[in-house]
Image (cartoon, rainbow, N blue to C red; front, side, top):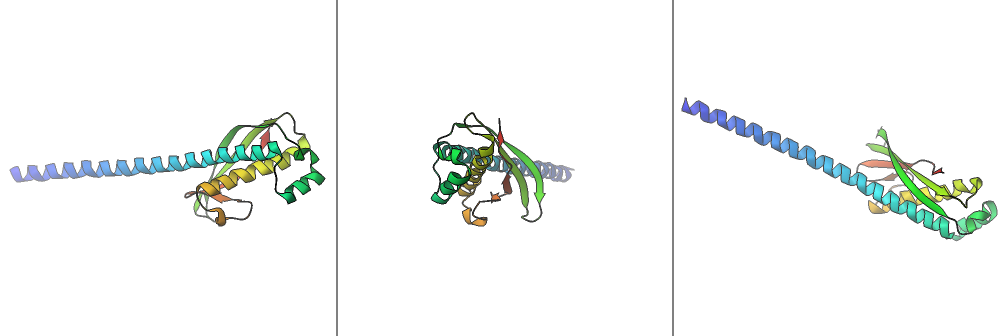
Length: 165
């Protein structure tokens, strides 16, 4: 009888240890996933602010400046643009990349931009969002020159059109 009780005690201890290990793995996995999402959103915020700064100060590469001078001359002057929020939308699993896909949408406001110039300013903001995320995860060469889509370790990230209020 004593021998059987010792074996039963060992089984209970093994079961408790197994449950603890499984719970630890799940917790660590969740924490790492949330950390990655936090890094994506922080990078997106930095990129959006940088894009707003570029648009707000009218600092562009020469070819972009020349293009704006012809098509959107208002963008060659300083603008007042504010980032209100960035929303993340889960788009499901992307079979092509083997990663989860998320879409980020930046919400902004501007009292000085005309409707016709908002698309160009929004494109510049989105470009900087994707570039900042690519830079954070050190994979600038994993995509095209517009960083679209951009990647983190576990996600494919795209940006939707900037929403203006």
